[in-house]
Image (tube, rainbow, N blue to C red; front, top):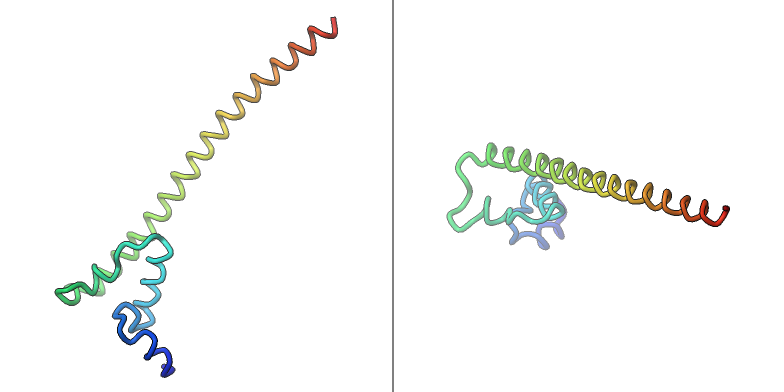
Length: 102
């Protein structure tokens, strides 16, 4: 490992190994679930650290998928309401044009 890497991040427990660095970076991108407090809190490391990390990563992936599905569902529902409004507006415009044509 390069010397500058050890100097820059030597005090950060979450960045000591490439695996924990990847998990910490992913957590920061998703919205920070206080990864450092969970795994490197005042009482040290968690018992069953590997299993806890695996469950945490699975949780991150599943929650991201669920959140994206909910957002897509909201967008589709909004589009349906806009389309219904557009149909009514078009019918109203056709009725106005029909009045002027007579």
